[in-house]
Image (cartoon, rainbow, N blue to C red; front, top):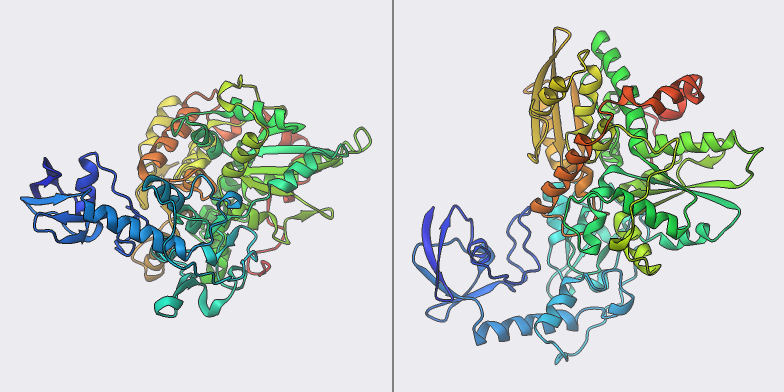
Length: 569
């Protein structure tokens, strides 16, 4: 629908905008919201985005469609009073220990209270004193800070299709909780953390493990080794005012050295190992025709989701460990062989865009020779916190290089950070022709982009290969249903739980809107374009590993437990 509106006396044309809020923002006016997210359904609960028409009537702009000739006002005395009243009511029912809150400085409620000059609360403070839920390995839930916006409920249901959070009770007793007031660890939460990425307050936050990292950094009996996931390099800079997508790998390395890390490597080298192993497995399945399609196994939230909801698919999921766990197993084995030279205990710290990696590292199968393959997982957000705590001026750091021998990753390993990256990396390995033109052809077969489900068909050695790329677990569920009914048939399926893939992980700086994610994806592809090594098999360190340590230890790259008997935590 086309037309125009008068917004605060300004004529603003609209063309296809779904609601008045979009048109208002198009006019350069930032109406406050708590419950509105462009990726979620319209809820209209918080009423902060109310506008006034020329007759004095008010309406929620997020749920009102634009009409030709509509005349509205966004900042009248009535609306100002209305918004302040809402904020006071929310604050009266909110735990206000802001200085010790994980969201301090990033809380939407705190931001709007300051913006609207809320200096005192006229209403009696209600203190429910609900217990903290710290049962999850990845997420902390504090019901005392919930403002009932419903963002987490809709994210969990509409985007992830998990639905472990919902509203319970009525009236003044209403609250958001897992079913039957259970803790997160007791329900089918997959630890994707997307609820934390949309929560405007500190009601849902990523579990902070920086204290554990500081402890090992200050322990001289430990050799502390960092691995940096591909998606971190295009997002960490946002915490320091840099634009989304700017590649800051060198600055991250410099910061980690200042923090006291002994060695710093790139998880991309383990992604190269994943390509080698997963491609071998894929070719074997293609030749046998058994258990197709092959589903990727890099995303721990997807793997957990499949365990709980589609256990019959476990035989179709690659036996490869995720790059994080491959790296941990290989690096620990590397240092075990050096015990006579250096007796320090190796501690592997993963820096990940993903909260589910915390859960993955804690799984019982990821233990080798009696020690965990990955000891601690922190997110991009947590690393930013450590850098700030140490007083490091990130933007002024001179870039430094990663350590060798595990600091060399191919472009194929780096693109794991974006949806479609795993599939593209595998295709690069499968094609016999290794020219630059082939790379360009693969890039344009249809597996790049931010669509929830992408399909492609390529011909390799005279055989047509059908590929699907999906991100968001709700999309994965719909795809699996179509495969089950025979409506769709694929040979290879890449699944990432988070919208956009790892670049949109819940451990990344927020907000992760579509603009931010697209720029992060562009940064990942730029890192690939400027990489001297494009394919995993061309990485000399991969060749050295297969000729050396992995010659008789390839089991380090695969799940210790066979599919179908994975531990159920």
